[in-house]
Length: 160
Picture 1 (cartoon, rainbow, N blue to C red):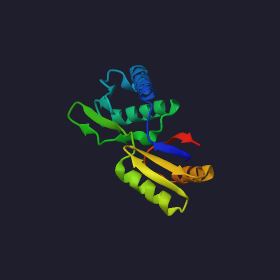
Picture 2: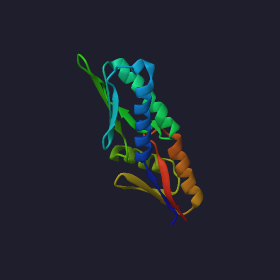
Picture 3: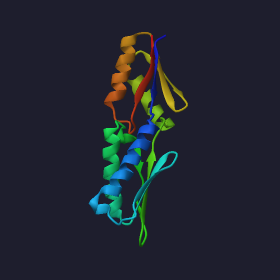
Picture 4: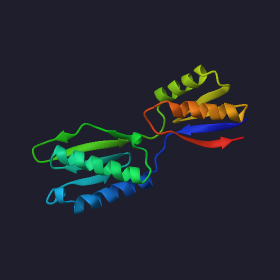
């Protein structure tokens, strides 16, 4: 039976490259001269550190530009509220990967409500869609692409 998987993944190597490029740009920009500002990539988050919230906003713009150049979808970013103290400001940007169960349930409900003759199953942090006809599967892909799910979607393992 033809099937495909719906996943939400980001290329962590490209994110690491974008963070490195952003760090280099901070070192060369005039408005960051003498400012203690840095990017730090941890497992599933990026930590922005600066002296003021203004610096964090500038750093966030730099990070977004670098990620777009490296073809990383910005929907995977979940910026948290900045935390500012007297001489430092910090902001965490979480990286969203995988489809959470609530979103997966909404996707299954949307597929079933569309009357396309396919079945959708939740398998961990991904969704498997199977059907008898290839055209039905392509209709399901189009349906999922049209809606905004709040995270980047990729369609993998398309099998006949």
